[in-house]
Amino acid sequence: MKLVIFGATGSVGKELVKQSLFNGHTITAFVRDPAKLEHLRNERLTIYMGDVRKPEEVENAITGHDAVLCALGDGKAGKIRAVGTSNIIEAMKSSGIRRLVCQTTLGMGESYGNLNFIWKHIMFGMLLRKAFKDHNLQENYVLKSGLDYTLVRPAALMDGALTNSYKIGFDGKYKALSLKISKADVADFMIRQLLDKAYVRKAVSISN
Image 1: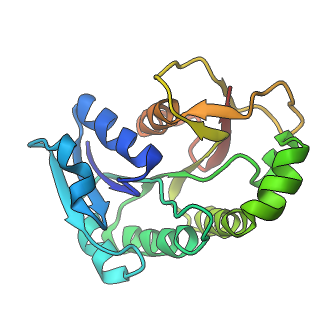
Image 2: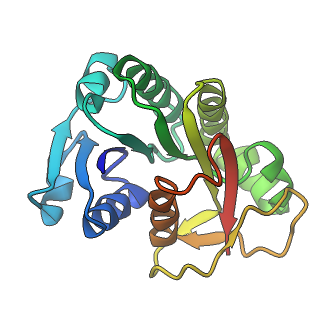
Image 3: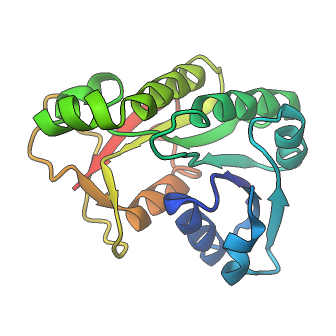
């Protein structure tokens, strides 16, 4: 499958690139700094340098692909996820691409109920308030897109190996969670959604 990955140099994005190549996909990695992917050079990897805030650059990168993986992030700033995802959606519509797998965060929508006091009131309430707002707007764009999307809502991202031992698709009342998950597990789950229709046009929460 021909994939374009946005946020390809981020914590989950690098795992998406690495695992997609391992699984035999052909990849276009949309990046601002190509040097960050030098260690992953491969004949099936094309590095496209661009700015996700510029619609024409996004459309140029997307054209000709089968699906899009989005793992945009900018830490606490809250200025990239929503606007970038909006541009991705419009470019997909223009290019006739339907399948979008987009990483957001646990705490969106009904999954807010899964969070503990610290995540609700300290992290998302104060320290990551702008990022939380940005993710919320990002999800709104995806939900209204009309595309064949899957919203993936991971808990706090951690370093660590691929385990496939995390919980999937729990409701907002479920509390027996560590509220952590490895970046490798998130990337693996996102890639598997490309061929799995169970969560098409749905949001799914994942956490240990």
